[in-house]
Length: 202
Image (cartoon, rainbow, N blue to C red; front, side):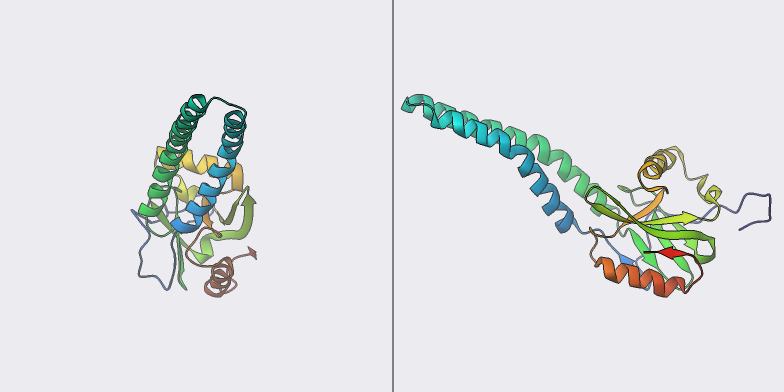
């Protein structure tokens, strides 16, 4: 951690979290995709209902047929406008590899939510681990004893970190409810591998 008054050594980084750790957590595209799809349908349903009411009020068969085609076209366009960005977001999250890995020595955690860049933190350098919720997302939040460990990770990481700090109070977070392991498994693993070396509020 360095000497008092001096900055600590920078945290070791990797392009993605190593998969050979004792406990590895990966993003679940299926869970996140289902929730995003449900939200998209909820947003589109008022438009579809209004269009359906307008169609039902028409008595001219030709007008009804044209209106039906128009509604289908609008629906497809809206679906593409919403689905394309969501698809890209899902791909970015999934292609970055694991989001968290634990071992008796410490943890690997992503420094950017939609990229694979990760940082290694020994348990002794962790100031606190807690759970935080924002909207539909439950997060495992890792706070360092000395945040200066992350000061040389680049401008893009600093930008992502500042946004995460605004929502969760730390730039190091990992999903709990959109992972390939259950929230209970992740919490139990954190408690087990940390072995009392850092405060945990979960």
